[in-house]
Structures are given as C-alpha cells and as structure tokens.
Length: 170
Ligand SMILES: [Zn+2]
Ligand SMILES: [Zn+2]
Ligand SMILES: [Zn+2]
Image (cartoon, rainbow, N blue to C red; front, side, top):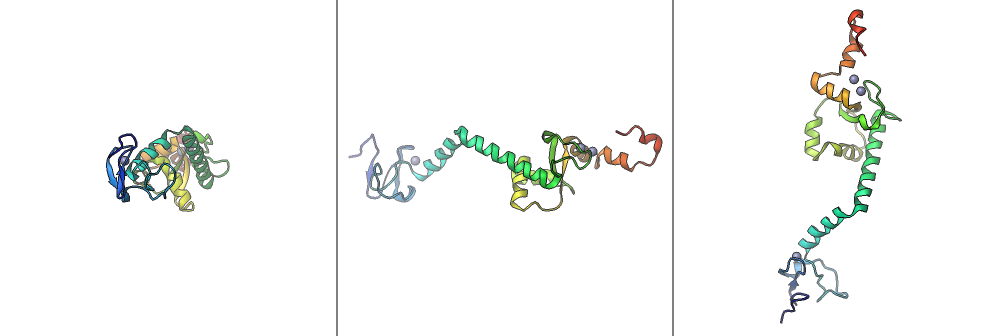
C-alpha cells in the first residue's frame, strides 16, 4: 500500500514528495541508494529539483551578493579595457563610473542588448569574446547625444571652424 507520508515507491518509480505525482525512475536524478532515498530514488523529481532549486538559489541573499560583486568586477574590467585606467568618456573625459557606459562605435548597441537580454550583459559578452575592437567608453550624456544627433555636440564643437560660434561651446 502507498504510504501517504513519504509517497508511493516501487521498483519502477516513485511519487515525488514535491509535486505529488507518481513518475518513473527516469524522471529522477540517478543519485544511488543512500539514506532517505527509497529504492535509490531521490524524493524530488528532476523537474521539481530544477524548478524549485533555482528558486531557492535566487532567494539566497549570498548568491545575489556574489552575483552583483562579480557583475561589478566584470563591468569595471570592460570599462578599463575600453576607457583606460581610470576609465573615462572618450568624448568629454567624464570619469564618474556611474555615468560611464560601453558604446558600440558603429551603432547596433540596442539590437545587441536585446539579443543578449539586457544592456548590462554586454560587459560579460565582451569578456567572453576577449574585448574585441569596435567599442568605446562614453558617458551617458555623450552616448545619448550620439544616439539622438548622430554625433555628440562636443564633437561638433571641436570641428567648428567659426570662432564666433565656437566660443559658445563647452
Ligand atoms: Zn516533482
Ligand atoms: Zn562624455
Ligand atoms: Zn560628448
């Protein structure tokens, strides 16, 4: 008879104690027969282990802190690789880290970010690809201006020959 506390277990499978479904052996990880695993089958099916295990890791504050710390280091490494040490904006020289971002020199940044699932993930992509050419560090101001006007007004000013207009440049 099935035992409702620990779930039904037989030669071919068992009841998962999480989703309460009877599943065949292949639906459980091969963990070998050790204490608590009836017939060598763990109490949670693979599906439950994957699903709820991930959830548990997500809610673990230590995992989140480690992930944030590792993201911060990866971002810093990318900023240094493209923006010098200490990193600064290629256009105006802004050096406040929080204002700095990686810019795709020839555009395509938005599509690339979408493809990766978020603009913050670009630094991990760069690291994986050994910091390829075609990127630079810009501050958010210069980056946004470049997106809006095609080039940053700072750049326009530098190219301006008319002395009278030039004096209004920053
Ligand atoms: Zn289950
Ligand atoms: Zn700038
Ligand atoms: Zn600029």
